[in-house]
Length: 357
Image 1 (cartoon, rainbow, N blue to C red):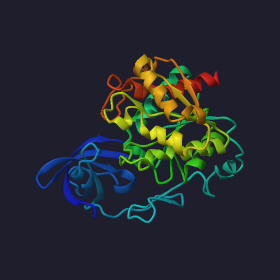
Image 2: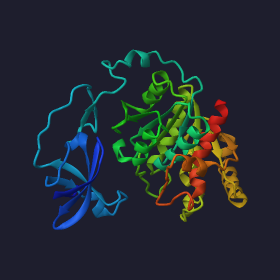
Image 3: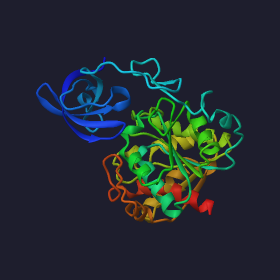
Image 4: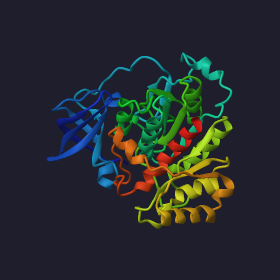
């Protein structure tokens, strides 16, 4: 059973077309909440709300925000026109969207004509925080290349939640966005990641495709129990569709958990055990002792035999981030605290861009 409470909107603290952040009074306490306009409509000060307070009560990584279920002062709404594909299916929040694949879509016939990605590079990550350094580096190297971001349903489902995506789109660092599966809120909606990839190539004419989940990866501390494991089948799908699969490795020397120190056990599991295709794995570490540890981990886990590990030497990640005024954080750590993490994502972009010259 989820935890629900009623509250009163005290102030709207941040507002976008698709999302509102606010303070709410719950049982005499002032707390934070998020509302998605598509689900609840626009809210105003004084509105009485029904809120899902589960994540905050569990102390999960939602930033301390509750989520609005309904505006009790305006409980009814009308369905918007267009589209027949449902997301969040068979839940009280099931929403209708216009998927690019559906028969009424103007893209339907073009998608049906797809035959191959023709070697289009597709970078696949495991964490949302890999998106910013990747996009900044790619555009810094060649601003004319068209980049499409595909958000999977492995973590947060509304793309609206990501301030990073909003900033990247506003600055022209991402040209198009697609939300696939049960994720929603992208510029385009797709039924699954495979047809999202096809649409990005066939219709949007993307030069580069970057795929990763939204904010909030799920992990359990077990070998296979994490949502980032989707990287394996997505890489395989890219290969089967005729693309160039590039894996963004999860690397950190700031994470004190042994299983995530150096190359994360997530990356080792995905690329060592689960992915069938031969992917490209760019590695970008300037510190010699840290590089040696990663080399040893790669050899110990047989990644050299299964994939094309590419060692790049590029120290421009911070320059690219600063050039576009983008701040990065992962697990609460910024670039200075965990530079190898962000350089790993940047290296994938660097490696791809070098190949496109």
